[in-house]
Image (cartoon, rainbow, N blue to C red):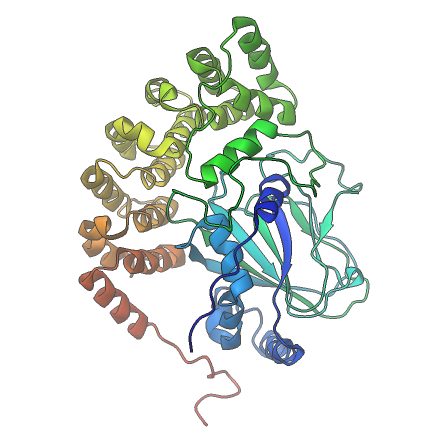
Length: 469
């Protein structure tokens, strides 16, 4: 059976995703399909509990959801055509009349600098009709790039509810603030959460792009201050134009000084100031580098976002910051260099040296950043192979994820990836398998097939149905 072509997002939908950080979409499966899915979910949850990461093999029909052209089209549009489904997934069950707290998801219990660019996304799929009274997920639009919750916990007029018929799903920026809402009806409500990751930097629009220039969407829901410069930069980045705004504004000393003073204030204003400074040449870069070295972790982090889009003029200062005594300054400098990608290739030797740093946080940031560096590829692959042997699990699985972005160029890492297939950490094993798939050479595929055969399991076998029929 021939697969249907992805139904790509329109320009207007992409504008909404960039600004609001979410889209509510719907598949067109039959009621019978969802009734069957619900029956299986009810049985599995009642007899076995939450299958967690084993949702797909335990409930086989669920794969059809992620092969649906609306789903594949949405993910392709936001993350590019070679996106990866992450090994972590979870079926959320809710039948209580109390709301959950507003939160951002962690990275499977670990920590990392969150991306402003859409490198990660989540789908929250509802397999049953989900009216407002059944407790759909609530999403606060426009908060994907805000570390702090800049809205009142009990007052949320702009909240988007993922409410609708069976087959409705929310496509969200991974880092957006969201919550569970009260299930007043008290009936079973499932939300199936799956995570996805970009494996290659955009070189052109991957959605149904008809208009090259950025403009705000008609349906702008974000309750926070407008981030016009950041939104335009993200649109351009998704179109393959990296650091498009660098050097496009005046470096007037008074303006630069005024913007620099805003970096330590309200988060929404500080973000706008950082992106504005990124446009203002070396003077703006220098102001951001000063902020990067701040003892205030929030100021340092926001300045890193500005430096990450400031272009090649930021590279030397960021490399110098790698020797700073403040762990957060170093971590944020590493992050910015990774975001600059090929523009920061000269930083690879300095980044590699940090793999011997005693701080796990720094080493993890380094291997994450190296995955965006494709030159010199031999040094990058060697460094990430070393990362696969790190004592820290997060460094190991981030090394593997970064290798997946390098494709066949990462072939020299295959022997260490084969060892990683037997790692004690579930995500190291899973990411190593995914990476072998993206490397795609004969040895990589043979190793992957052998691993999958050795780890295969029967999705029909349960405690109540051990062997027959």
